[in-house]
View 1 (cartoon, one colour):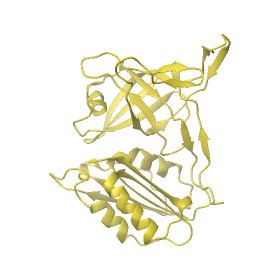
View 2 (view 1 turned 45 degrees about the horizontal axis):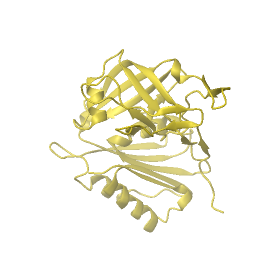
View 3 (view 1 turned 135 degrees about the vertical axis):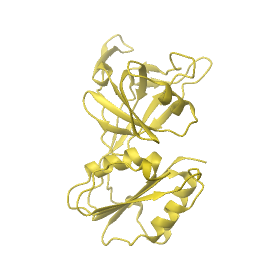
View 4 (view 1 turned 90 degrees about the horizontal axis):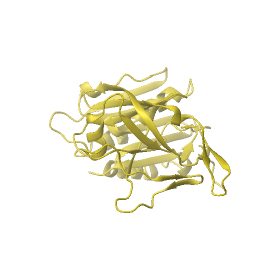
Length: 272
């Protein structure tokens, strides 16, 4: 049986109606929304037998967890939402099916959740993030699956584009002291670099696509990852971003670096 470097937990899917309390542009290319409200805590609903059922409070144990964000289309006040049931969410609706987009919570407290949106100028969720103001409502569900921070690891290699920055930011904050890490992040330019927690033994390399270069149109990230000196010992390799770059990095780590399955975590967050 292979080793398990991350403990996995499952969570009941709970729809939460929250309020946007802050809107902040972290960089010109990234907008941060802070949502809050009583729905982050436990609440009681009626079960199928008429007995009360307690829905759990919001939790996000993994640095790369995902919540589904449901946003109203332009001109509407509310999105189409799934129905809450005691055992999860029911997406069976008449007409339009509820559509939720996945986002990594950047910061979580018992009272607030921060969500970062890339300001790429298209898409329903990105458009909503441009329009929303403090006092507006927001709807999230999940995470339904969480993975604890990897253990039994000697070093980390982490890579991603701007869509991976929420997860990378959380990773650096949760990284145990004394564990080395190489981190590579691709963004449009120096104006999109973020202030991240960088402890001793951590090296962060920022890559700039340059003016006029659209995300996903270069091999800059994959080429830089291939050129990295490989750490000694058990190395956990994590990458997220555009699907073609993710595929190339996964192939390199599996074929050239011989990263074992339990230490390989690559996700295509989006496709050009």
